[in-house]
Length: 338
Image (cartoon, rainbow, N blue to C red; front, side):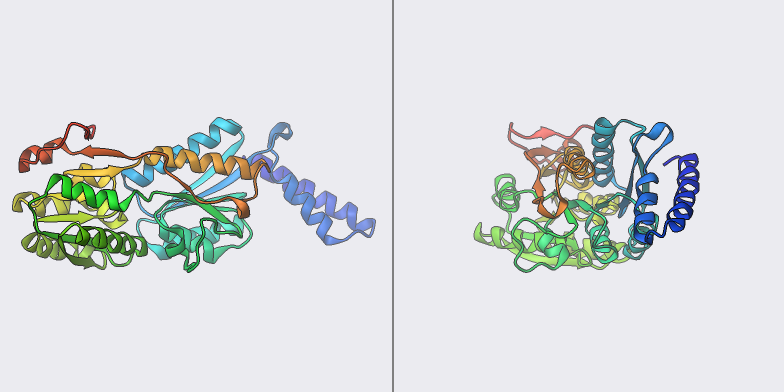
């Protein structure tokens, strides 16, 4: 909201409080009136305040945030919504600090981009509507054992979960003669654990031997990736934020070793992979923005909104790395744009 609008709202709220007190009315009415006024800009137009907490900066999450903002601006106009966009630089504790600041500001809605952001929002407020995006499995992320597709309360959002059995089938399609698959992921990300567990079962049914290679953070990624490359014919990495922020480390280890990496999403594949079955994170963010517009306009209640999923998935490949490793891909794979 524009600063002048905020100043105006505080002055008006104070005047209303004095007037109401003189009439003997209660404090709740004054507070409600001030809250309503605080969302009006010059000319009486309503302006929505939206807080955005993004875990870390990388291609996928950036695209989701961009799609979210574009969808809201398309609905309410550039003057109808104001964004407080903050990045936690990969630190979950910073996510909590950011969320708490949004709660103190009394924003109208919070976008939690990635699992750690969503978990911080869950802990930080049960009143402000929260939409997650770039979250793989909400039941796992939020500790809901009997998750049925709708979180309830003040939380909903969109999932970036691709069909994990089809990702496993992709490894079989591209590398039918390989035997050992290393599962490289960050153990601090619960949705990464969920993905590798699911892919492991699918790969074992296809006849592969799988081994976990878990790193706790970027500090031990190089060591663990080196171990994985030395013992694996193929490496699989899920949609993992730590991996996404450090693809160069993985590529500098795996490509010279001649070990192909199959990735859970396009951004990781562009940095270190040969192929992926991926979604458009921009489209995912756009879908989240459309959900937000319905909540802000009163068209929908966040507690009743089921988690939405990407409408389509695309087989893509990294031409440069495929050429370097001599990996041939079928005609139905689409090259990632450089």
